[in-house]
Amino acid sequence: MRRWRSKRSRAGHLLMEALAGGVILSLTLAALASGEVESRRSLARGIDDLEMERAATERLEFLRAQPPNSPVWARPSSGTVQGHPEWAWSIVPEFVEDPNVRMGFSSIHYMRAKVTITAGDGHSVVREVLRW
View 1 (cartoon, one colour):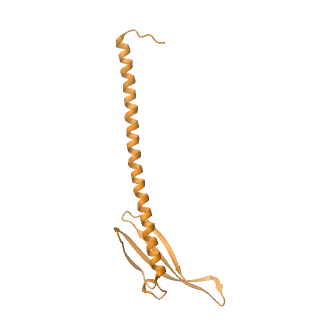
View 2: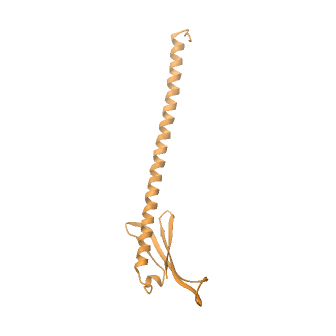
View 3: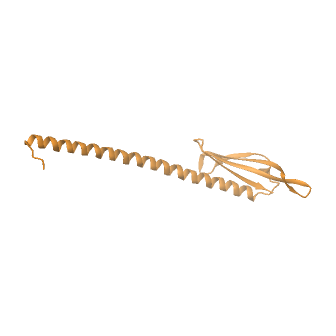
């Protein structure tokens, strides 16, 4: 056990412990605050990603509901996502002739469309749909 020589020495030692504890406490609070900010940012990004997936799925279901001779399957189209005016969607259909798959005498033909949802910050989601 340490013996204190004077009250002044004891007070100085307690002051140093209090200062060290205050520094540790302030660093802990700063780390918690930055962690909370980052978690909010990550959560907001995850919600936006889910919304973009939902919007892409809506466009895919719209395409699947159209008949093969619909104008949607004939030429590219684009617009804004409902509820998110800063997001844009585009549909680019193309005719595909696959020579690697033979059915009878000729190769297989089908339509493929790429659905792209693009956010204002440049983040995008791309999905494909096929029409036989």
